Length: 516
Image (tube, rainbow, N blue to C red; front, top):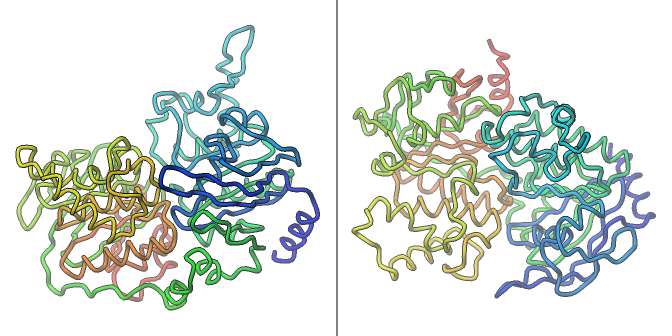
């Protein structure tokens, strides 16, 4: 594998870049997002762009695709200078982009989303039969089978992400840019996507791949460009850059290397004999979740492991009152409790960081300060308003504590990178001093350094008695941080495992039903 990749990359280095930037710079108010960035993307390669949140990855993509205009520097496509005023101009030139946040129309059907703006016509009218057939074929390339006539919002976010990928790949492109395409996919879906990308690479398409998953970077990449603080740190052949070196280059020093070599930080010991803070007994929702029993104890992290569609997010939504259960009982602090709404959950000391940050987490038009104090103010009631001075103190505290990269607390949250938005959502719930925290994909779209920082903070709170329900599509992450793991399959719990000897292989076997 290494030799074939090396030969391919040597060939690329001798060829002309298909897409290239020379000295690209971009400044936003108070922020130097890009500074003199040189970048090369060759035909027939998969090139990963790596860096921490705020390193400039998304800004570079936005400049390449006409979302933003550069302040200085030049973009070349097939050796010719180009300047795209809009994403449509970039698409017309053969650059197709799947952005980090899914920008589809949830009120339209799956097929309408895949062919929006380029519907095939017959005798002057839209050819719906052709659209449906071609949509099914595009999804079939990803081994996805679903009713393309149904509204997109009828499907979970992970399926929506697959639809977005199918749309991006259904256009005949010279350059395909994928910004965090796997953030909501399980391992099987990632493997299928990578097979498709490898096939596309063989046709000569140049693929730019952006991810925070280190394993995925090395599984798919021919070359890697590292960004740090708006500057290109370097360009490397993937097989010549060890993972410890990559992380050190991303963060600017070697402090993360020992963390990767030595494993995760020690987790606190389970509190012996502690009564559950929250208990579910036979809780179910018709057509959504089969009856499930769960106990979440103070000072303990309960991980939920399972594939896409196993019921992880559905369980979280039932616990937070977003969805109402049809059967079963929930008790909080030993008392039977009805969680009929998120307000009920917040009143009982439960916080929830949802999977879909953009749709259910942030309020993009509000400032960082306003987003952080939302839950605390809602719990107090609007008649007991938190003073502006106190709001700023709270916001500044968590900006510093979680390392949120922002100009100040008054900056609109919509201007932050995805990872920093995620930190703000976490800060919102930490500010309420919850007794239990539900974390659904809390490190989705967050770089490796920030992942450790956030989880260190969560683990520290756990030692003080916080009960945590932790959901992640990365089984390795669930195993690393959890005291107990509930394994879900087909919207029911199939196993409950505990102890330091629990391994990824064991969890995967349970997910697959190999032990039955």
